[in-house]
Length: 229
Image (cartoon, rainbow, N blue to C red; front, side, top):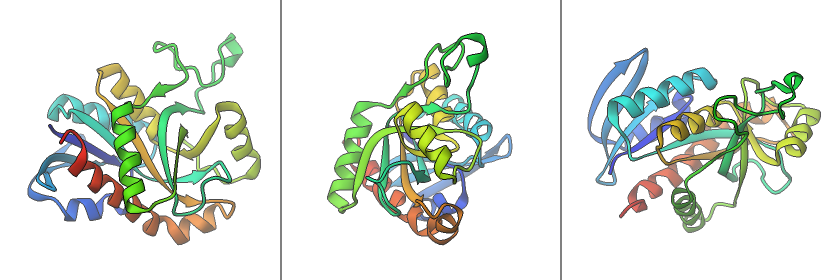
């Protein structure tokens, strides 16, 4: 069983790549894919770049070229709830794209045309395994909707809107598109985010992003060892 891991930035994936053995590297469409093993399990990992388009490109290429049995999108996010503070873990039970908006045509905000849905459900087995790993490692975590869009969300007004409109617990810029690509291709997926910014917004992110990314790596390494075993 091969597990695909996608992150937007080097700081979100470097420690995992450093832990990989027997690696082979290939660049496709400007994205570097690293194949190898982690905890003795086959893994393909890639830094996709920031934003939904890069994330979708990476996920589709990974599926077509490496045929992973599951994909986990990892990294950092901003909290949308008082239940999650900086360095806590958000796990997606489902993802959405908050900047999809054809409401002028009578559609609900967030509806993805063609798929005819707002929310893309994460795989229950993957989610459950991630939750167990976070528990074992002692990380505070919540599972819920993670909202994605091509925006860095930092104002209280926008955070409140995403919480109320989509019931989202965290906001980032890639997971919703990874979820859509996996849904269309029938590949089980999940999204795992460590909170890097709370009420402090940009200041929190600049201070804590690299540290928060390490928590995601710890959880995903434990997940790789446990999933499907």
